[in-house]
Amino acid sequence: MLSDLLAGAVADAEARRVTRSFDVVQAAALIRAPAIDALSVLAPAPRVKIIAEVKRASPSRGTLAEISDPAALAVSYEFGGASAISVLTEGRKFLGSLSDLEQVRSAVQIPVLRKDFIGLPYQVFEARAAGADMVLLIVAALDQATLVSLHDLVRELGMTALVETHSADEVDRALDIGASLVGVNARDLTTFELDQDLFGRLAGRIPSGVVRVAESAVKTAADVAHYRAAGADVVLVGEALVTNDPIRTLTEFLAV
Image (cartoon, rainbow, N blue to C red):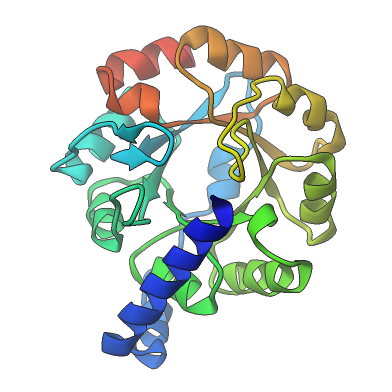
């Protein structure tokens, strides 16, 4: 599944490059206002922080929400206390787009993450050109040399990489490249199976100077509390917010 998602995202990026050249996207990225310092915003604090996700669909659950106005949803997230917004820009399975990201960026004052299957420098420049402050890099999808080069590019453009892991080896690979924001995804992207206890087993490998993000398998405030007790500084939440009242749900989640 992960290989197919990455291949599709890269193919779609190559198709966009035909009509919007690398040079054009690079130039657009370089003239953007500086990215928001996401690390400062997401730094460990006495209370858990939430990255709230704009997510229409997923391969495992199909369509979740129509989300005709991603900017309005993002505004409600910000009002509800989210520290950052994640925007799915993958179009084939998640029904997202870079336009969604651009709309969200124009509507909120908090950091915005481009969540996609990134394998090309072109996609990183696209993210910055669209206003992203953060870019997702999935360790399982990339060889180490590509992971290093993309992570370096994200930093050169003033953004922060959320480096996603799913095993002890992947956490070590993330730390080896100097990742400052490390996510542990409870969902195995090769099988789409969930293991909510995975974060707790891996959190101890992530040093205190690195922001720890728990991803997936969040339906209730008890799930957020579970991750917080295991050492999560930040919890990324998507489905629970788009399928319920976002402000009420955020209020419940942030109260743990």
